[in-house]
Image (cartoon, rainbow, N blue to C red):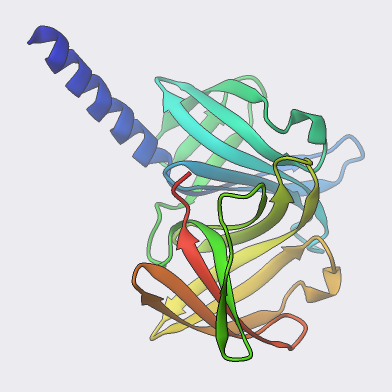
Length: 236
C-alpha cells in the first residue's frame, strides 16, 4: 500500500509540474555579432518547439523541437527537428531548470524565460498534425504516423507550424506568431516565416470548427489560394 501511495503521489507531482510549464514562454538573447534575437517557446503537454528570430525584422534564424517530459527540475527532450544541426534528430537531451512563478531559468545557459500564457485563452491550445485536406469537394486523408509530418503547436496566444521528416531528418519550413479564436474565426498574425520574410506582419483570417474532435480550417493561404485543412490532436 505504501508503494502504491508513493507511485500515486509521484504521478500527481510530475503531472502538476508538467502542466505548470504548458503554454508560451520567451526571452531575448544577443548572438556573437551583437544581434538581438527573440527565443519563443511553446509547450503542449507532450510536445514543444523553440524558435530564434529577429524580433524587429522577423528574420527566421533557427528552430528545434520534439517531445518533452519534466522529472523534478530536469527537462528531457527527444529531438524531432533541428535546423542548426540535423544530426541531433532522434537524440535525447536533458537540461536543468529553475521554475518560479511565471519564470523559467535554464541553469546551464542562464537564460531566463518569462511566461506569455498558460495555454489560454485561445481555443486550440495543444499539438496537432495535419490529417487531411479537402480538394475538389472531397476529403483526402493523410496518415499521421508516417515520418513526414506537418505539426502545429499552439499555446493560448501563440502558434507555430513545422514541416519535417523524422526519418530523413529533413526540415521543410516553419512559420509562427500570435493567434486568436473569436466567433468561429481563427486569425494568425505572422511574426516569422522561414520561406519568405515578406509574409511577416500579415494577418490571415480563417474559419474554424471542431468536427468529431478534429479541427477543420478553411480560408485562403498566405499566397491567396483557397485551402481547407483538417488537423487532428497529436497522440504520439
